[in-house]
Length: 262
Image 1 (cartoon, helix red, strand yellow):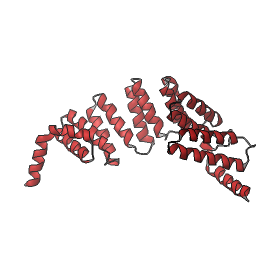
Image 2 (cartoon, rainbow, N blue to C red; image 1 turned 60 degrees about the horizontal axis):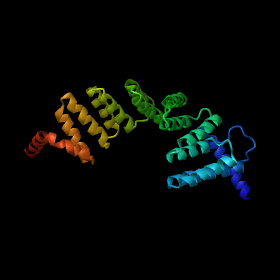
Image 3 (cartoon, one colour; image 1 turned 90 degrees about the vertical axis):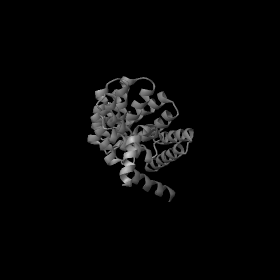
Image 4 (cartoon, rainbow, N blue to C red; image 1 turned 180 degrees about the vertical axis):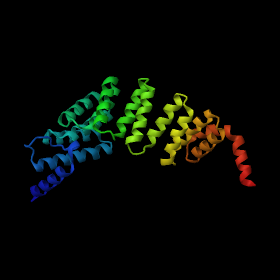
């Protein structure tokens, strides 16, 4: 009876995993019960990692791989944990295996690129980010990470282009708007910067970073009133840095207070 239950779980898993994380490849020698047991170890690994037991997580992913050597997401997850504890070269080896099993594993390319950045292989990282986006143009992290890498490589226009592509293809994300606003500000394109922060605020009205950045950009365009309004809102949302800028707004705050008292 116990094996029947495992078999049923295995069938359900196989029907739900999809192409990017099938975990079975073309290996017909892995039985349904073994597939389910490997999945159980993978779930246990994720739980251990979330609870801070990284070595325990690695051990569980290793058990999953021993049971099912073509488990692409087990290699991927083990690589993520290894990268988390600074074992970037070992992580890359795991990502390599996951990608060999599943050449369309976009998240694995993105993760491998992150580890390549850590070991100084920026060219290899850029190639991997490009491949991740080629496979999945809606993979937000790949656009953000590639944009940051381009900034480090002093390709500032390329960085901006990546954030704009993320906005075009992906769900709204506050980090993208914040990064785009900062990148435009760095190039002294202050009006565009303020506009980028403003668009982000429409989606994320509680993100104080966007008000802080837009305030800086507005100040550089000569819109002191707008800047002060943003910094006051930013302060209300709990941003300590904004409090440092508020003395610049004493005159505006006094005018605002007086108008409210009339």
